[in-house]
Image 1 (cartoon, one colour):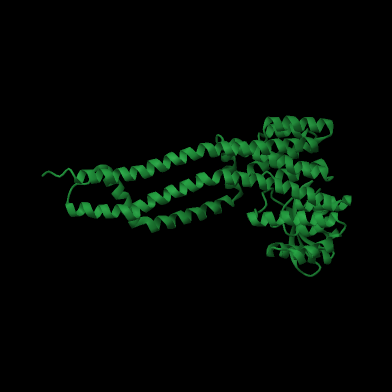
Image 2 (cartoon, rainbow, N blue to C red; image 1 turned 45 degrees about the vertical axis):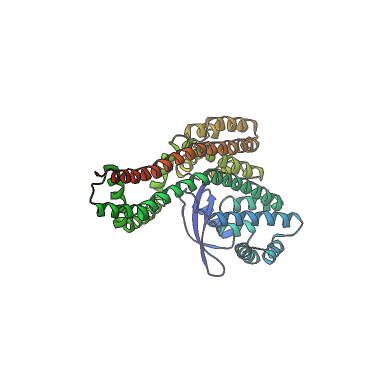
Length: 398
């Protein structure tokens, strides 16, 4: 199996591009034709992370999956469930998403096909989980498990954001305080020294020089920083640079360990979800690899999966890829041998999610005092410089 990007024409004349797993180009085109579309171009798709939705969009997609699972589990088929969700949606974005899905379903598409048309809103594994639920007659259960997985992931992300919010706030306050002193306070003392005509102490001279530089070049510095941010974001959109950057992050002390733990948690959670809903091992492993969120890790896991097709065990190749922790490879190997890979992946996901939270809190506990020390030294240095200048004024000979 390989991943292909198929450009196709819909019955209404519109065009779209669909990513699909297939044995070859002909099989990919045939699968698209079976959906009632006309394929016009088939090409291999890059194994790259899908475009990341915003935090609100992610929560909206999770809520839609949760509410659809409740409605379908109550006995509604997918079309009336979407119609009910559209009528009673409290959020505008949720209503718009339900309306788009409902229009596709009324035009003959399945829910999984409707998900697949909008990967920017419903990324993998939305289409695959829905397709598995449709095939097994348990769409509500499948969507509920998908919502459980996403809610668990969002809770972990919220915990991490909360742990890092206070150090970030302290850093911003320190930068704001120092900038305020240099822009509004220091120039007043500079005028005082100019009136007296006394030589400025070296420590105070450095601070006065920094204040002058900010006053003269401050707007240009802000523009330069904005340009650098734009260049950085553009560079991260280039696969080669992004892969090198992701690999560098994984090599950092503490941060790299936490990121590897996060990758393991995401991989194992999605793998468990897919296997529980009836996907076979190879497609499930491919989709779980894409959930890693790190381009270098995705490439290494994809290479490991390619070797699985040659007859080698997946756990053996995962360990050699140097992406997942050794414990993950060991337990996946046990699950592979016992035929219970899904359960092993679920246990690992729970373990690594907990470990990731602990690692993030440890990093937060290290960063917080470091930021406090930095803020104290920066603000204290400016204040001491001003005081030393004032003391020097009082040393005038009588």
